[in-house]
Image (cartoon, rainbow, N blue to C red; front, side):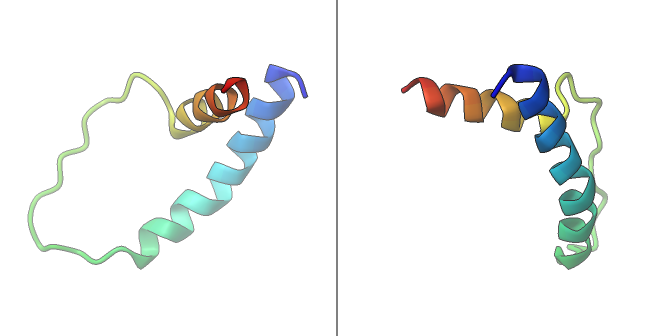
Length: 55
């Protein structure tokens, strides 16, 4: 599997999974920090998958 295809599949998964997952999280009632991220969740997961395949 090439890198582009892997990323596209991970990105498609994240677009459906993350919003549903966030709905199930408990709200602590406090203010949440939302900092700008340098990598998207899809990019992070793709890197983890590539790293785990290389081990």
